Figure 1 (cartoon, rainbow, N blue to C red):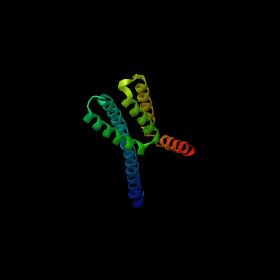
Figure 2: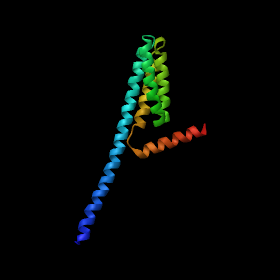
Figure 3: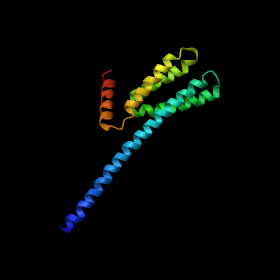
Length: 138
């Protein structure tokens, strides 16, 4: 084996490994952040539902938190954001209504968040493309 091969092969392998590792790390950390935000959204809606008609100051704080998370969700993916808006609306209407619509909205949000919380980039790309096309067609 020549001295060039002895140096070049490990160097190229090392650099390639670093690039693949960094890319994988970025993908998994981004998905971890996404899942964390989805969990925060659920807790914010639960808090919002608990404060409706109880304490005006706590409700204002809960609405602000839910709005902030809703903005992040809107930037992340439209279907998750839309499901969150429905869930938020049901949380605000919950005290005087049947809880089944809230539970249905929660289950729908969790299902959509699960789909969009995947680290499979190819699947996420096609989901986003399909949803953008659907929005553009309407």
